[in-house]
Length: 122
Length: 100
Image (cartoon, rainbow over all chains, first blue to last red; front, side):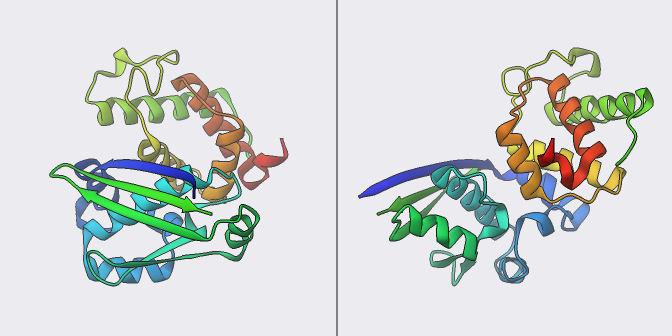
């Protein structure tokens, strides 16, 4: 049964402006992504950072808990379509409390936008 | 704890309004403290995060994004003026902002 869902839409051009201005990564990424994510996304390019950010925003909307921050959920891409999701200990406790047994993430890519959907299943 | 003066407020106001003017591609004098961030300026979380980063660098702030997020959820802002006031609180209290 679906417990909740979160949807996020990010504009590619705006995201790239903020995160890759003047051809280098903005310091903002270190507040948002884990070291493992930064290493992983660097392999897959700009789009991975955008999808990672959008996924985190969608996850936050789905879980709707102020104790969950950007680094409490980690997404690691295996290829363009497959990824693994993991959580901090504190977020795992919140998910257990809500009886969430599965998290499903979906990405939809358009010319100008990336759309992320996250479903929390219990 | 940083001391907030009229000069600090003027600086923060200038940074915030210049930022939105550039982001939204509108003239500075079209933005006031009463402007609605979402309704008038089409603002979003990406802009908010970028502003936080600008102020973290400008004032060498020691504050975690998660702390600001918690504060923002409890104290949502709607207008440019409210956002300026929030930035001033962040500059003044940094990681202690949740104790207010």
